[in-house]
Amino acid sequence: MSAKSEVQKVLKGEFTYKTLPMSAMILSPPTSPEYKTGIWRVKKPVIDESKCIRCLLCWVYCPDMAVIRLEDDHVKIDYDYCKGCGICVSVCPVKAIRMEEG
Amino acid sequence: MAQVERLAFMGDEAVAYAVKQCNVDVIAAYPITPQTIIVERLSEYVANGELDAAFIPVESEHSAISACVGASLAGARVYTSTCSQGLALMHEILHAASSMRAPIGMTIANRSLNAPLNIHCEHGDVMSARDTGWVHLFANNVQQAYDLTFISFKVAEDSRTLLPVSVNIDAFVLSHSVEPITPITDEDAARYLPPREYEYPIDPDRPITYGTMALPDTYMEFKLQFKEALDRVPEVFEEAVKEYEKISGRRYWYYDSYGIEDADALVIVLGSTYGTLKTAARKLRADGLKVGVMGLTMFRPLPEKELVKVLRNVKAVVVMDRAYSYGGLGGPLYTDIIGVLYRNGIRIPAKNIVYGLGGRDFKLDEAEAVLKMAEKGAREGGFDIHVDWWGVRR
Image (cartoon, rainbow over all chains, first blue to last red; front, side):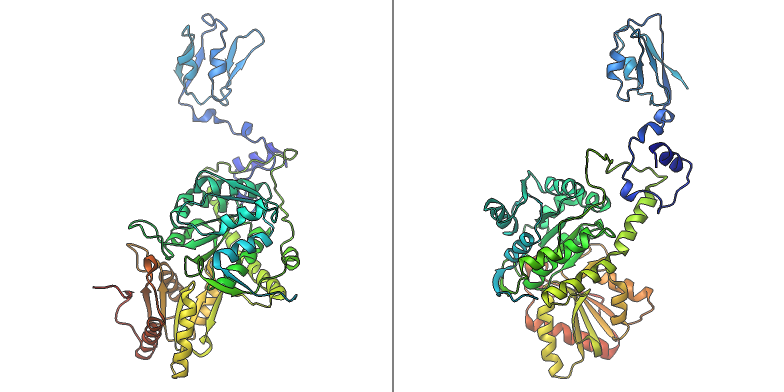
């Protein structure tokens, strides 16, 4: 079974204790991309492109690889996985990122 | 069955010899005081080239059992040994070992836990690990300590179980006492325990994630799987002891017993005290007292069905505990037995004797007194008190 369909079944509740793999082993990794941790977020980081100096500190520091580096070294946030920790906000040297509701 | 010489061994030496014959791949240990000679002897076997195994000297008991879990998931046959404080330090990982379904063989030389500092024989250490999901077996003598080591790996590594198994031996009484044993041959040992086969070994070509997180939506399902693995232990155990009987001539079962066929009064116990009670019961039988003795070999999973068959036919039961559940109803075996009695509708008087804590001797005349007390309870249909701390100076 592919990682994707395995995870989708669990997320939809289509499983019993007998259909789950033994002792919570993941037999077809990676399954973590299927688990959108962005739903944990309370506030979200928003980038002000006009202030960004392309230093990439936010890209380095993001613990969830939720800051995506673009070809021109600008960045964007992957809201599927961003948990809203705010580390990018605190490391940005030019205050180009702020936390907003939602 | 090949003829082999009898050997004189201390219990711990006998276990080390058995572990060598089991041809384990990995031994991880931190032999802090109090200890036995088990891992010391194994390190010699490895150093001398008599045993081809990785001996990992780690920095704590917590690390010892952690290394065992990793090696077991890699597909190795894994062994460690500990007692009292060491087992307590392992506690966190005992749960991980069993619920990650990592088969491990472990000998526990049962000793008291601090405080006061004591180190002598008691079952308090393993009883604190009772609910970790390990299979817990108890040896009554040195021969059993040796034999159950083989049986423990057979039960642990079966694909239906995949569970860690402890073999409990009474510290000093068995671990440091010399008794004659009849070993099995190396050839029989190798046939009984061929190299381990495992469906999910750590393999870079087939990556698997072990020890993952399971949130409230799946956690209970995984725990029910785990519970059912323990439910399958009896069928695997019965096959394992049958096969072991073929090579050794020695028959193992959920318990050892004496006189239970027609006993009015039954005394149940764990560990070496069984031998003392059996000797006393033999004498009382000659005097016409219908007493029986049971020494449980398998404590976890608790063999409820087998216990019921015996308990249905007696008029009273005395349960002896070399440990106590502080703040609870009595010793841990006693509370198990009264649970078995109640939910199977068996209404007989049951009494708990708490004895031998911190290594206090339990002698033959005391065994006689307990059996007589059990017999009196059967005759009179009750006991004076529920729990008796045996021999305490008041």
